[in-house]
Length: 425
Ligand SMILES: Nc1ncnc2c1ncn2[C@@H]1O[C@H](COP(=O)(O)OP(=O)(O)O)[C@@H](O)[C@H]1O
Ligand SMILES: [Mg+2]
Image (cartoon, rainbow, N blue to C red):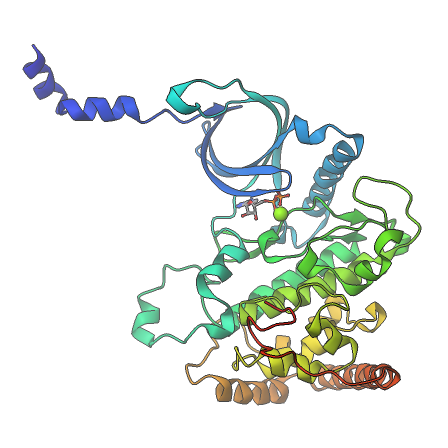
């Protein structure tokens, strides 16, 4: 009898209906697929659970259709080899996404179409990676709007948030994360690897709040003898983060997957420029340049050595931008790649040497950052400070000479600042 059945199973008729209605998880090669973590040029990245041991992983699903060309296949092989090299050689392996398994020739089950119609599976390659539970930096920044904009919390509010990720708030956390990004880049560059697509979407945060550098799809590996310069011949990366020398070489670089390179640039110096853009975004919540080309007012200011104007215009919207970070970024945003500090030199900057690891932001805004900057300089290692100052003076002198060569000064475009004309959205 129906009524007895309901009593025995302790379910209502509608629950039976719900059980039938929620589709079972799709399973592929022993992994139950979950939500989509992200999507990029090469396909989707899915969260999944390994059925044998319950481990949660991230799976990059690469459609064979995207591997139609030889260049694309070579590129995937190179991405996997680079990630394996970093995982096995580096003492900082926890700062890189680790590949756990690679599956080729997979029939990837697709979701049912409209009306529940089954779609045929698609042939894919699966890269099974360690899962970074706190997602990517871009999503975090979109939520918070930038570390220098984050107000300090009252102690009781902070205490109530012990369960939030370590990276979640504050200037100190920003410095810690950025130092970890630089540490990861130093490890790459020492091994002759240039990442070539450093940006917040490719920076992940693991379950312990540690930074993990991801997506080596554009990475270039040089022969060890080539270090510290890593010759790159490909026009690749993401527009807002591409260094000026890549734009300047333009057509002389080969397009991704194409041949015929006649020029090259140093991938390590280009990574440093991109890392500077990431720091700027972490602090302000918006990018420093639209493109590092002559069409961009912010770039022209830097090219003319007028980083003071660059910051003055940008900081109308973000007065709390730390002075120490301005000093560091003035050096990083050197148009001449040879004048830029290396990632290892950046780690020695007084602003990065002091503080971090805890919430260092003050609710009182700009004045607090001036104070903090003074403390940073006082607390910094004297030798490092002197080296930084010397380099800074050399860069300033060079920039000044370059600026005086060019006719006319720079002035902010009408309405410059966040959202103003002339770029730097
Ligand atoms: N190991 C991972 N853990 C958590 N999320 C990840 C992981 N790998 C990638 N993602 C998410 O997927 C997105 C795309 O991954 P990515 O490797 O950058 O691929 P693409 O080459 O398509 O850009 C990332 O921006 C991130 O949001
Ligand atoms: Mg990516």
